[in-house]
Length: 130
Image (cartoon, rainbow, N blue to C red; front, side):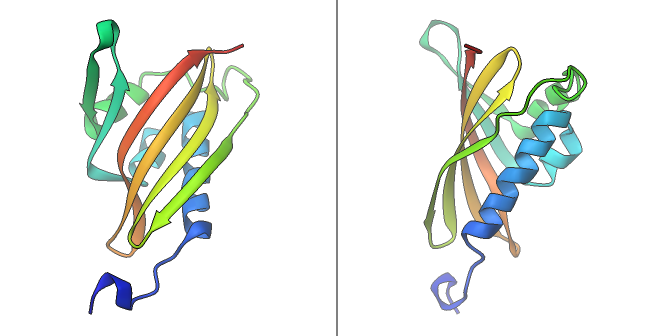
């Protein structure tokens, strides 16, 4: 049996993953983030002087644990799914959210693994709130 022979959960399940992501970000809940990231995932961002910074998800989760949750600051949520692209057992979610003092755009690459969608790569950009 191949992946194309079975029916994969689609857009609704990916939208639910995005909602879990938004909730985890608002609470800065590393355990909630860990529930939707594959253990081998990486987080990638543009660094200083046109460099690329790639961080294993475990190290990124350690950083998340040190951050003040937007919920505690009373920050207004502005979560948005910009697009979901689905091809067989892989998907790309483009989302935006506020994590004051920044507005963040994430590209979340996902695979359907072990019966569920999991984030395997997060590429993001953060801009100061306007």
